[in-house]
Image (cartoon, rainbow, N blue to C red; front, side):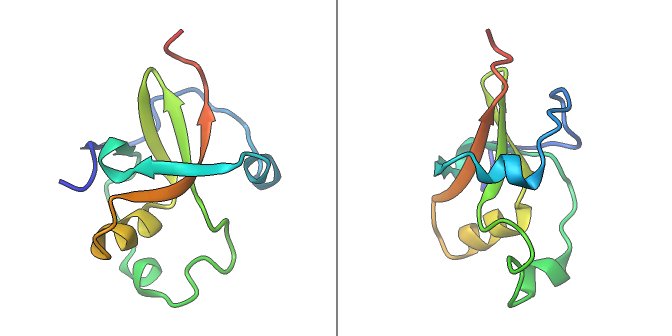
Length: 100
């Protein structure tokens, strides 16, 4: 199993972060096996594109909510990491402190 669970949608409240806000969060390593996806489908064109990260953030966006790590953006990057047999990836993690 690559991910902890395959989800469908975002169970956490809207955070309203812009790309600039995300860029201010320093990336850290996250285990693929700890992530819950927020999308069930993957666009193969995005996965296989040579320039997949040219227009977006180089790091995945993850939201911590109620003790779970939700992969909000970067599913194709996470799948690429898994295909390269990596167990971790670098992601920007927003902690919404929903478990407090």
